[in-house]
Length: 248
Ligand SMILES: Nc1ncnc2c1ncn2[C@@H]1O[C@H](COP(=O)(O)OP(=O)(O)OP(=O)(O)O)[C@@H](O)[C@H]1O
Ligand SMILES: [Mg+2]
Image (tube, rainbow, N blue to C red; front, top):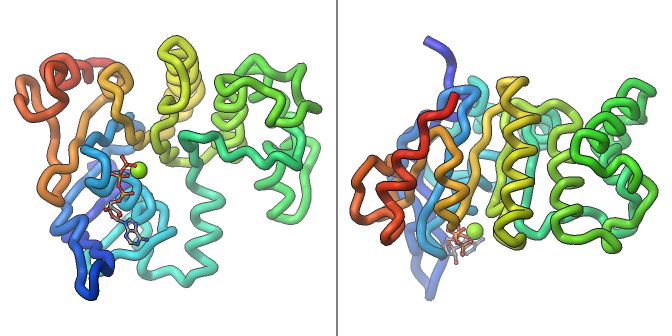
């Protein structure tokens, strides 16, 4: 059997509230096949970002196990988790999160700088990716001067520059119009699929979920698969969403 890229078992996370604890995730079991694109849906406040933070090791669960690419995150020290995240994971956020005081090229090269310096091969890879996202002529620009769609294309390039095994995206099209969102999704398809890179993508948008291989939803503090004909998925969209996974 192929090793899953993400395995969660008995995962639980609560947060302090009003002198007590409020449980956000409880008994979450989940296995994501390597190489697949997964959408994660759920109402605001249901724990989607919390789940991404647990998968990336930014946050730690109260109970249960998180394994990414076969590595149990609780076996790693804080420093090892940071290195693991830097080397194996890529991130795309709703608000792009490019560093405004670095040029486009410097933003892309930052992960390598943090590893102790940029090699010519890495610089080449960054330029290649900027070319693939159609923005190689902007490498000396400041991110703030680019449009939202352009910034997100840069952010996609940045997420992939070190060839991560898993990309975590938190509403990557949430701040873009529909057509621009499509362009960003096309890029994720074109750039991740050939390398077998996995994607876990939080979204509210049915048209985004439809492009993924499987659709999960957080319901009653657990993660369940959204099946065809599921009435309680996305109102008026669930059948369409659930039948969208025939690619790949
Ligand atoms: N560090 C924290 N301390 C306290 N409560 C937190 C913390 N992080 C998240 N929560 C709470 O956990 C719940 C889930 O939050 P989370 O950000 O995961 O929701 P979400 O599904 O991503 O929502 P949205 O769609 O609005 O982004 C919320 O009620 C939030 O207030
Ligand atoms: Mg969120």
